[in-house]
Image 1 (cartoon, rainbow, N blue to C red):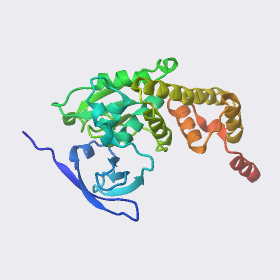
Image 2: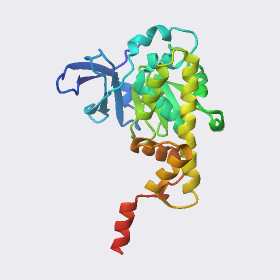
Image 3: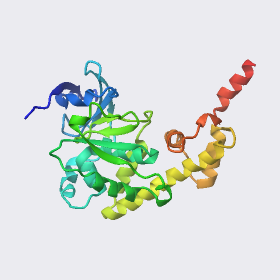
Image 4: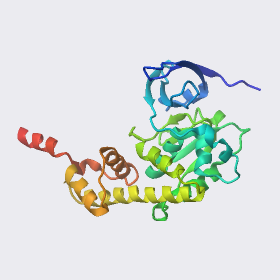
Length: 283
C-alpha cells in the first residue's frame, strides 16, 4: 500500500495579539494538477488557536501567500452529532467540509459551476446525497441549469480538467475556484442565519428563498443591461425600487458576478459615472 506524500506548511495565526504557530500537512497530490494555483486551507477554531482563519498556499515552493481572518465562523465541533444522522442536511455538509468549502459550494450553485470533491477509493461516494441537498437550496425556476456535482479519485486528480470547476478535498481544502475572488460574505451570513433555525428542513427553505432573492436581482440586472448601458448608481436605484432593498457594495459585486458568470452577460454596459465623465473630458 502506497503512503500519501505530504507537504508540511508552517501556519501562523494572523491575529497580532496571538501569532500562535502550527504545522499542517497537506497531501502533495493537491498541488500536482497543472491547473492548480493557490490552495485555500481552512483553519478552524482550536486547530491552531482560538481563532478561525484561511491560509492561502502557493503551488510555487509551497509557500504561504496570505491569510484571511474569519470573523463570523460556525463552530464545526458542535455539529458532529448532527453529521451522524442518515439524512444529509446543511449541518452535515458543514461538519464534513467546513464553513469555507460549504460557502464555496453555495457560490458554485449560484454561479452554475460544476463541483468536484476529491476522495479516496476506500471512501463512500456521497455525491448523490450532496446533490439531493443542494437541489433543495436552488429555486425551481432556476433549475433549468442542473447542479453538477461528482467525486474524483485522488489517483485521477493530476490529469483532471478542473479549470472551470470548483474542487475541494475530502477535508474541505479549496483546490480550485473557477471564478474571480469576491467576498463570500453573502454565503457566510446565509449559513449563520440558517443555523438559527432549529428545524433542519426549514433551514433549506430559508436558503432557497435567499438564493431566489439574489438570483432574481441578478436576472433583473441582466434584462436591463442586455438592452442598454446604465450608470451603476442608476442601476442600484432601480434595484432598490424594484425589490425595496438597499444594495451594499459587496452584494452589488456578487450580483455583477452572477450576471457575468451564470447568465453569460457582458457587464461592460454597467458604467461608473465618474470614470465616464473623465473619459469624455479627454475628448
